[in-house]
Image 1 (cartoon, rainbow, N blue to C red):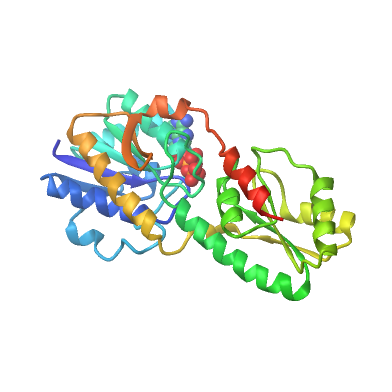
Image 2 (image 1 turned 90 degrees about the vertical axis):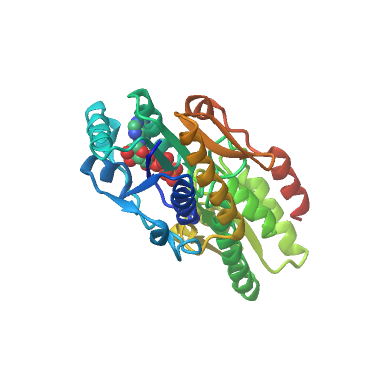
Length: 319
Ligand code: ATP
């Protein structure tokens, strides 16, 4: 293995830069050349590659976003597009590719491997929606961003004695809502994985208002529905003053947390090791505090298990 390429693909996440740094520096440590690919699979098809050295990843470990930029690329979903990408990789003499991204990006990596090109995936997404790994890079930072927002919204909700519905990202996965809701002491957490009863929620809100509670925070995962609609229902059914806040893309930015930087560093280095060992079609993860690797196909087939115990605990504690 002499030349490794690295790209970031799909939605960006804080910590992707730390992962790129780990790939570049550990590959150079092992005597390899490293190429960065701009704009994910789009850049791969277009041949937008450049050689990276130790200095090219200096001063980025603390920065959000991705210096390689990210993109979604429809052409890569076609066999023809992927063949173009493999041609580019061969022309540049690349022997292996590290793909930092989410499940869609991993499917792309798997298909490259099926064409005989070695590829390894590193999980970079705030959603934490990949079942084979306990955590993805960016999830912890996103949680802390949401937590900060909850504190600020709580201040103003309390002053005005309001109910606040806060919508967070995560697509079909409720982990951001669950973990941030528990950590932020939200009164109600609504996620796609668990049924909810709007009347039951309204009853609790009325009861706690009657007990003298000044405010209530409702964490809503985007996969369930729109914060404005839920807020309107609550307003109508309870008569309580309510507001909706959709946090949006602030959750995807910001300086990565210590946890995400350490995780990204370990995972980036592991991906390089796998390629150097001649392994392909693998993804890197963390399970029970150990960095692991798994076949991509197997990893993507694992059904995601929602942490119902944590959800139950959050509702017991939120009174
Ligand atoms: P996030 O979870 O943050 O959205 P992601 O990696 O899942 O990240 P996607 O938009 O699903 O984001 O995928 C990123 C890119 O990966 C796509 O634009 C496409 O180029 C490639 N890709 C996705 N699915 C496939 C597939 N089935 N086959 C080949 N390539 C794919």
